[in-house]
Length: 359
Image 1: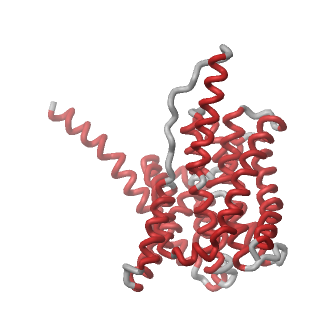
Image 2: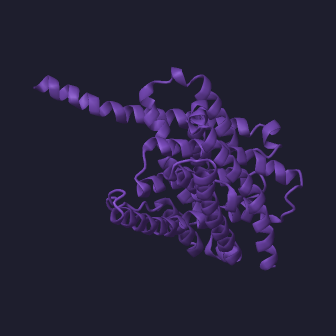
Image 3: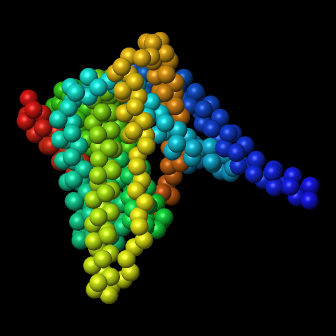
């Protein structure tokens, strides 16, 4: 009995031990990435540690990861998911309510326009043109419209869809969201966007998929653009709750209609996934606005947060595999690509319109 108990405790301890090793591995990897990004040849190009991290992580993940102990994967996943959201929440210490007021109505307007138009276009495009099933089409649209993989997972909970459909949507988001981190700064530096700092923030924050991808892309323009882009992006993230509520009402109505028509059974009550990291971001913004922390403490927390973001992006890179892109399938990838073009072209047009309207 004692031997069995010992084996049970050892089995329970192994996953947590492996997770810790995985987190430490990512931390060491991120430390090396940070030193690499500080080299003049890279720093002079304006490439942030976040982008270096995701590139280096992707190279490792697609070449050498087979040599990493399998039980470390839990630590990689923690860094790419939970640590990412914690780091994003603490990014709020770099923003104040006064700055949010400066972005104000333009930021809210561009967020609502992008979210609504992309959701409608993506759902219609996926179902009617690409002949995807309803859930896959909605998941792809949600990932592009709101906040990438986080939106996909939140919508999966509401739709009660199969996990493989989420994997398809996440693969598309990873591909095009990561591409944005390189394409957007290049478009800006080439002088093709014709946007001031506010416009860059509106465009980047309003159209790039993931929160960390927004930070990574905008950090290669300026600190001011990063502030605006993050605020706009978090406004999009916060729209996740009302959009999920609207989706829940629509699904319930569809279920009642199908049940009354004898075409199926009503779905069970759906769980609403609240983006807690958005609430954490708001809390940190309020703390920063009240100036309750000493300046030195805020600077130290920001430095730690930058390293945590680098860890998260490195872990995301490690988890980005060529197989993910293949799993997305040609029709889902085509849908994601068209939505990506829409976000660039349509998002730029909306940004110009919003800037002129509020000039």
